[in-house]
Image (cartoon, rainbow, N blue to C red; front, side, top):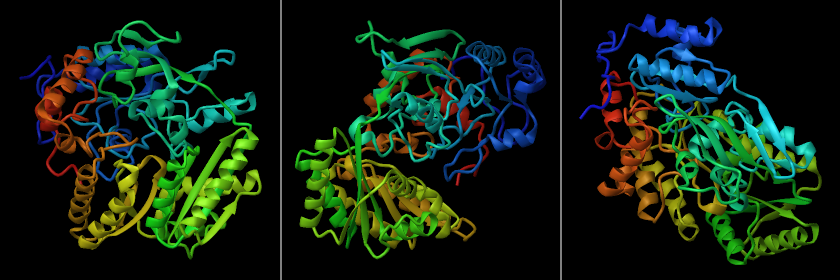
Length: 497
């Protein structure tokens, strides 16, 4: 059953049915933002019609660049008047198609809202706008003795608003937690144009935890325009180790042994040989290219405990056959090792021009088994896979690398991806650790959730967005959301893959 005045557009690319003419919408948006704040030309719409995922372009309506909560509110209200959906967008680094516009929505690009608004050091809180780049935030805070703990590999480009949308993690989420643990409150423009504050700065805000529901909502519940983030003190001591192993299984087993020993490092990252070779050619950090896999481990805290933990990790690695153990001797050496890990996805370009990346999570106890199954799946589909992952919390990141110009390769890639998801779920895992569901994993949701689970998620979504206008076509399968059905009807056949 349809909800609200918006109806789907036609498949032939003609004007949307039941909407005002696009030029009237653009006129209203320009009146709200000025001519510099709206782009409706085909080039700009095309540029913002995709994200960093493997999927092809969606179809964007006008693109808006607001600079304040009031301007975001004006855009949303204009979209409501004209019966159009709205899709918020950050830097476009998402890997699950979450920012890909479906059904010609108004795209709200938040990159101009990039200010650090307030820093409250005594209470360890900062208010930021959603377009603040993750690494820029930490760079501004670090001289004051603090940083923003979530550190996705794309942190040089991704925005805090995008981190909130996907509940992003990163290597250091093992010890510090994902984004939801570091967001205290949000000012949100709801899909009807109202502005609310979710959460609060009190230790125990009153009422339901709507902040917790919003973080990870992938833009389906509204648009965050101001975000109160928790500040994490810079650790007094840090030690980074690089251990080489003959096989990925040995590296993965060492991760489990470290945790079993009662040590919770700041990070435990594994890379297999193929990606390690590519990374070393790129950054020249001294990674051992003869190792079957490497384990990057980092401990932080007080100097005495850091030294003891580093020594214990070295010993555990040696017991499990580590072929080499190296401790970074300087901040520069440590930075080089982390540069290698965080640029691993870019280094894949040395192997093939395209990659498809999943981020399922499995229990640490079956990590090595699932990893071997991933290699077998890729081999069955005649594909090359490289593995680089947050081993400490079981967050797999298998990259199927390929050249999409090869006839039929996308079919094999998507089939292999589906098998990787199925294998992870069969091992007791979950669909996503930090990349979100988007469109990539939307149709896998029934593999993890039953009909009642999906129905209650849809009810929560409609409580925020009863007219189904917020980032339609994402997260929930079409049968559980009128917005999904409407949006997908307006997408031309063959737009994905």
